[in-house]
Image 1 (cartoon, rainbow, N blue to C red):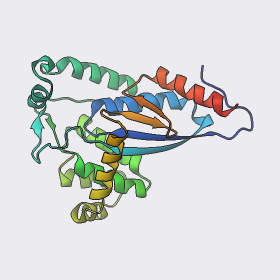
Image 2: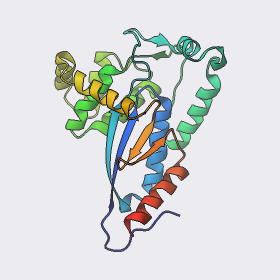
Image 3: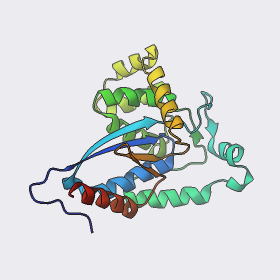
Length: 226
């Protein structure tokens, strides 16, 4: 049972730094699990969420790579064609309200442009909306989230200016801030994603289930209420 907030008590401030990549399926699963745990406790929590850059494949070329070829190169023959994992993700996504639509011609793509736009979107107060739209564009719609045209379309879809986004990519104003963000989390020991850093103190690695997130939130609430 979730922790009940005491009558008249202020919501608990909760800062979450979420390190992730937009082509990481477990990142959207982890976020959805966290979101589900938060739902029944949102009256008691004042969430301050920040998404941070992590590139699963920082050396991915402009044209991307076939998913099956990529899995074989990265994980060896034991990775097979990944069909079992894709089936599990599809079923889990459906339970959490997210649609995975894997196809035989799916490609892994570079995500550095996307991370630059996410950095910009945070300044615009639209970071979470853009992040979720990018997850949907890649996993649900099979779109190339390295393609500038696709990125500008997704940006416009969340109510941001595609003209300003185009300028952001053209002048590279967020190249160094994103690189610095990536280096910071690597130096902090983040080697895989998703990684949830709670109140700048507690680290939750991986796509935990909603019950695990719920237990963590209840402990924080209990401590907050004294």
